[in-house]
Length: 392
Image 1 (spheres, rainbow, N blue to C red):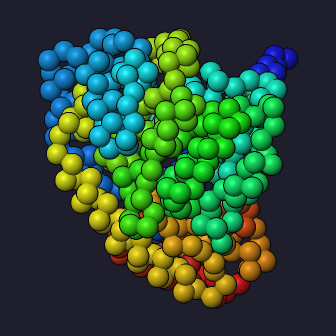
Image 2 (image 1 turned 60 degrees about the vertical axis):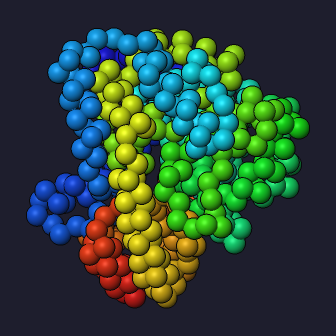
């Protein structure tokens, strides 16, 4: 055995993705013949719409297999700019848009380009598992602010004001939220925008679940649309995985201020070169083609949301909010006298239901389950969870 050691670079000490680990464990049990209710996945269970697949096939067949510009093909960037203006309410030049191999990479590239040692990143909890590792990769420090279910998991604005220091570089917003399914009210987004402008810090707005919103009182609002001033402080991250059921395609994008977009473009050019060429044509078809498949999927998720909430919230000892977006239910299991990691391990072992422990999301008392599955699976999983809770 040699005596070589890992570098001191923060990237050498990242934690594996807990959600991917749970999914792999559930798949292994399924492959072994176990009847597993897989509720850990963070991807839609619908197929990619046919017209999107056909566009990628056509691109392959006509030879779209070479490099593209590092930031994406012009036609796709123009379509994204049009989408931002018509759907999100803010204008952005295509030169400030960077297409990437997934929204996760968009966030990673933005944070690692913008932040460094000595910087602070305000991170509301519960948070998506990868945010902490992105911050760690940059060398910055995460300043975690706990958000309460009693406040629909929205940031407490007074706490946000108190958390800002001269070292605050960035605030991360994720609405609709993974893992809670909470959607920020437009009025709260507007107040956060005012705070960002007043204190002059950047906002990374992860809007990957924007099209999966189910309640009129919690409509999605892009923070970049609030004012030109906050737009110049905003990195808007989005992608195709959730809205168009394209998780394996790995296609995302961001819009950033010109001074930052050029640096992110350079970062991407030296890491991934460019997003996969023929995949970009699938993304173009997604934006320019029929949107009925998106609405059909949203309506199906809304029905499932109502079903899973009614079943899980009725279990004695379980506390949860009614999610307004995404496709997750986040519930508190602290009344059972164990943390979420133990709860999830035992639930999988005893009842063969796969969830994700809230510890991965900064909330050790909670469990995330996904309703990106059939209604029959939801009913069966809820029955097993209720039986498991009753046995504790």
